[in-house]
Amino acid sequence: MKKTLESKGVKTTIFRTDDGIHTAEQAAAAAGTTVERIVKSLLLIDEDGLVLLLVSGANMVDIQKIRDFTGRKKLRMASAKEVKKLTGFAVGGVPPIGFDNQPPTIIDKDLLQYDIVYADGGNPFTLFPISPDTLRDITNAKVCELKVIEQKG
Image (cartoon, rainbow, N blue to C red; front, top):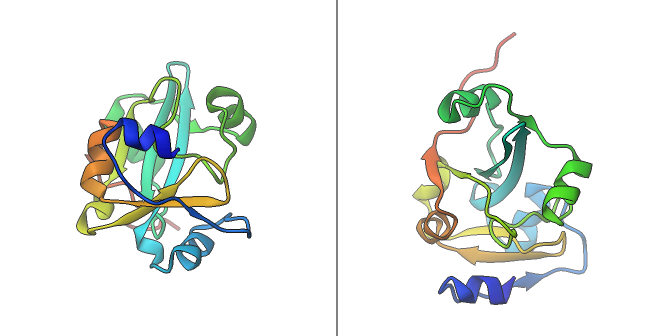
C-alpha cells in the first residue's frame, strides 16, 4: 500500500496492529482517534460492476441515496465472496486505492470536515492517515452525504 500511495504523491505512515481490525471502533482505538475519522471502504455491486463508498466510521449508509446519486437502481452491498473475487481484498481490509481498476468512488461528505482521517491499508491489520481532500483527489471520488438521516419504523 505504501508504494501505491507514494505513486499518487502521498507520503504517509502505515500503522500496523497485531490485533485484527474488524470494526470502526477497533480501528479508532488502534489509530488513537475517533470513530468519525475512520474511513469504512464499502463496496456496492450491480450488473455494471462495483461502486466504492468511503464512509465515516460513525455513519450507516443509505443505499437508496447511492442508487439515486448514481442512477444505478439495482446497487446492493457486495458479499464478502464477491469483494474478495473482484478486488483481491478481504472485507475488513479493503483500501480506498490499490485496485487493478479503481471503481467509481463516492466519499462521505462528513469525512471532509476533518484534517486527517484513517483508511484501511489493504488488510485487517493496517491503517494509514491521510487528509480527506487528498483521499478524494487520489480516488477521483464524488462527494455525497451518505448517512441515514432518519430511521423508519
